[in-house]
Length: 280
Ligand code: UDP
Ligand code: MN
Image 1: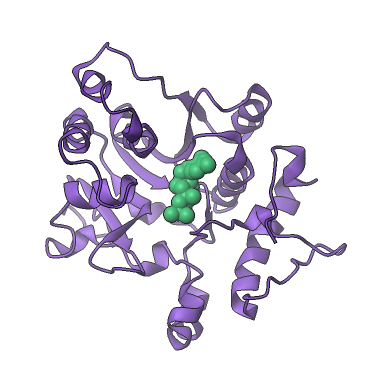
Image 2: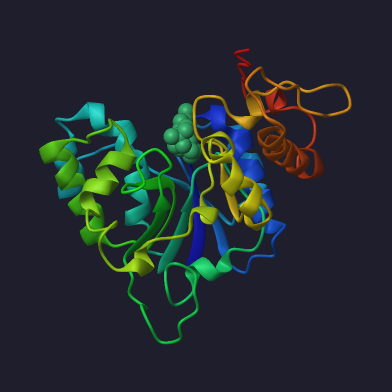
């Protein structure tokens, strides 16, 4: 079984997870949709998730039932970082495409499950690729951990936990840990590298404007990185997003696409679902 999986560590990203799921359904994917939730996610939100995801999987508190968890008991500060690592423990799935809850899928990307992890269909090749991801715009020799393809395995799961326990994570988050663990990513087999079009951050609108103009019609997955998420934008009465002082036309268009999915499939306001701070 193959699945797209996202993650919800609390209520505040719930509209992101719902929009992501609907954006995937709209592409007529043939894969399962699953979401990992922590105990901090409320019952009403779980009910909404159940309506669109095939599986809502609660990832448990740390306990002493496994050696992997035992090692973490003394390192509570790594708890949040390691939540995403639970993806590697979902061995009921043979292959997973992980997507952050702040991503939006614009077209069918089921080819990410294809023979080669980078989506190219090279028959009979690369069936066992362990991991693939796209470059991070800030340091392209690192991958961005908001979108990745992997084969869940207990070996990688425990290996990641061991590494976290022994050396922590250089950026304080899961991305640093994953980059240390899959350290051959930038120099190794090119099929481990997904095109940036599978994890395009709107920051590229500014950082490389001509490239954005050239390739914007080819985006597959948009990733709204940073502290200000689409559901925090205010809108005019007609539904158009209210421009923030730094926003360009192209970045507004991307945020508007997120809202179009929200309006079409969910309706109402994100604040009907969870608390939203607008932070203008
Ligand atoms: N997340 C969450 N609640 C939070 C923070 C993070 O559910 O308060 C989950 C969610 O899936 C999110 C992912 O962890 O997409 C990574 O965090 P975020 O996307 O904020 O990091 P960024 O991509 O901005 O670096
Ligand atoms: Mn993200």
